[in-house]
Image 1 (cartoon, rainbow, N blue to C red):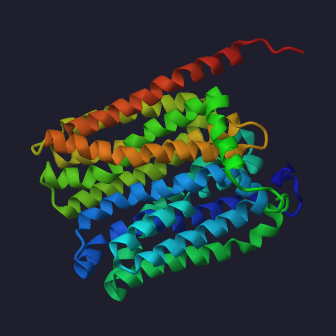
Image 2 (cartoon, rainbow, N blue to C red; image 1 turned 180 degrees about the horizontal axis):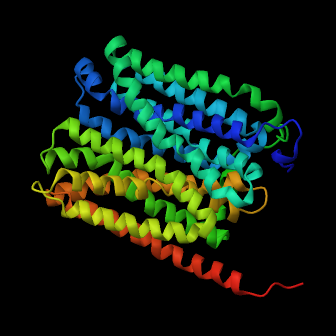
Image 3 (cartoon, helix red, strand yellow; image 1 turned 135 degrees about the vertical axis):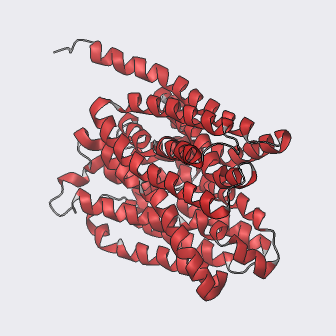
Length: 411
């Protein structure tokens, strides 16, 4: 496969990064469009707003269908066209939600997940060809800031749209954002999709080949499991931090939401910082440190009580945000490095599948612990344990990397 970076007509990596950032920003509507507008939806439809909590799990369930097909789809359509198609599917899913029926809301989340599944692998495919080796982790991490950045954007624009236009107008506005972003990608397609092969078959064989990397590539398997373990901590923190503060610490919703926003902002900053550090000291070392720091922050939240100073709780949330939300770019760059030649999209698709599978299960498990214990202590301790499992899984990779460095170079 020809490298994008070697083509005279190829856009700069800065322009590609901006395009991918915009794609992630717009795509977060699939995850947060309905949950953010849930109170307005409940007023109009009579549905309990708490049902919106299953939206994220359903989105990940939808991504299980498309993620394994990403490798062949990239080869057939090209990564830019695939991103455009994915954004169009996300827009379709959002418009389905405007029907307001419970079945439509379920279908909306599943369709949005199908659209979201290919985005990260397609972006990794592009950046693997273009990112300089010396700054690979930083480039991947900057791209991944679009996820928490998108969460902040949706949180800012969806409520005003919903209040001004009704919740259906708010959802439609997010769908329009996805469509406009897809159209904005068009100028990049000619050069970045030039090596696509329209004859590539997309089917079960391609999906099996992508998922087969989990079995045939031990290092990729370990990285995928690390991503799933870290993802459990990330998801459960992001999903339950606000309700933990309001129910257990008796904070008002405004303060609880502010603390979550600070944590998300720390996640954005952390993704850039850890990418920069990983390019200096090595990604495996950084990922291990982030796992340990996540566990410490989660234990701190597990011990938090109503009498604690609010600044201490906010600090623990920021620490959790910087670590539990900040690891993704470093891990994706390592996935691209370990992928077999020409299979970065397939490898990232496999990683996304394993991650999504964990995300479908994690909220149910966390909620079950909370219900069984009537407290969030066990849930946050489970987050800490999950992060430590990720550190444990990284150990053989660190040893292998250290042995490679120590081995004398053969002529």
